[in-house]
Every structure is written in C-alpha cells, then in structure tokens.
Length: 292
View 1 (spheres, rainbow, N blue to C red):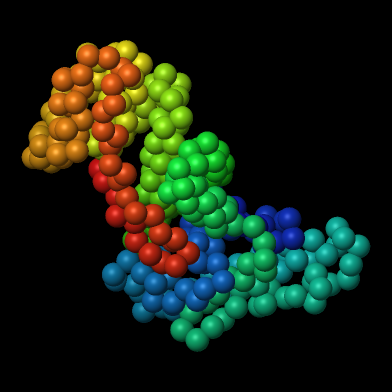
View 2 (cartoon, rainbow, N blue to C red; view 1 turned 180 degrees about the vertical axis):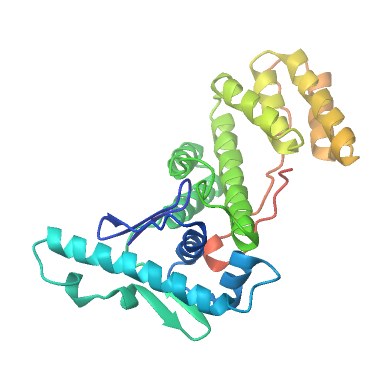
C-alpha cells in the first residue's frame, strides 16, 4: 500500500487507487492512512465524523463506511491481481487483512509500502542531524528533498473534522520547521541573495513568525541591503504589537541592534535562534513552534 497525505489524499493498493468519493468515508480513510499500522479507536473516528454530538446510529454507520472501504480495497486487490495475471486476491490477501478490525478500533495495514509522511520524517530527521553536525550542504540537500514531498497543504482535498484538523496543523508545523532549518542551512552556506525572493513570500504569509523575519533580515543585511533589513524589523514589530500585543523577542531585538551598530555585510551578527525542537510524529510527539 502506498499512502500520500502531504497534499491531496492518495491511497493505492497494488498500484490501484482506493478513493471513496463521499466525504465521510474519505475522512475515515484519511485518519486511518495518517495512523497506518496503528489502531485508530472507534471513538476518535466517531468524533471526526460527527463531533461532540454523534447520532445514536454512529457506530453502525461507521461500520458501513468500513465495509465500503473494504469493498474498494477488495476491488483494488482483484484488479491488481488480474493485471499481474494471477487468480483471486493478490497472494491470498483479502480486504479484511488490509483494513483490520482490532480491539476498540481499526488498523490500516501498510504492508511495507511507501508513505510520504514517513519518508518526510526520515529525510527531515537526517537533515536535522546533519545540521547538528555542521554539515550544512548535506542538511540543505536532505531538507530540500523532504520538502519536495509536499504537493500542497496536507489532506488538501479532505473536508477535515476536529481530529483531522489537529493532524493537519501538526503536519504543517513539521513542514514549517523543516523549511526554517533548510533556509538556515542555506544561510550558513552563504546563499543570502538566492533566498531573498523565497523569504519575501514567507514573511508576507507568516506576518508574526519572528525567526523567518530574522532570517530575512540577515539575508538582506548580508546582501548589502541594511535599510531594508531594518524595515523588516519594524514591520514585524508592528504586526506583533497589533495582532498579539507583544514586543519582538530579545533575540530579534539583538539582531536589529547588531545591524544598527555594524557598517558592512561582512561583520558577524547573531543568527536567529531555531524556532522548534523536532521529534518524530510517528511516535505521536508534539512539535513546539514559534509559528503564528
């Protein structure tokens, strides 16, 4: 089974797409795909589908959606087996072997297939370790590969409920953390001018993200655009005060003061502090981020 969640939802069994069109079965599949090879409790699925006030028939209806998904999986197995010139389900595997009823919930079995979020976590983790080892070229390459796995917002074509919204936010935070670290690696490699266009877009999108603004200030300053770097600080401060009632952090204030006191882009000034501690989402850990 191959699973894509870093963009539109995609689930393929033996190369054949398994994709319900109705919104609620699609939600069930998305939640199972996000937690592939792990039990997803019935209560969590019910909350995703109906919120805090599920109907009395919720569990029965959920079972119907599971049956519909198994029918799609079974059809995919047969089609995959038929294209391979085999008889019946591939290797004797049935839909119930792929979408398994477990105590208290259901499990979608990955069968050793590809998952874009698992690959993203693997590459990003290698990139962070390369950063820790000051292998900035390796870190930039690995993090760029990780970010290239994204084809849009996570689960872009799924109408998310409470549980999926939480998962989407978590995934977007991991993406932002990897993006920040990739830019940091490029800054360490002296690619300041090459980053200006990308950072212009990012600070417009994340108006109160201090670390991205700090990176933009640094890239502008080291590109010989000191006045523009100071203007970025002022816009950040205005947004923080207006939207959050906060002054910029001490790190960003020190960066601004360093730019004010120095006279040339070759002078060493502090690099913005990293915004987050990354831990594997596969272990259900949390990411603490400075993103707005």
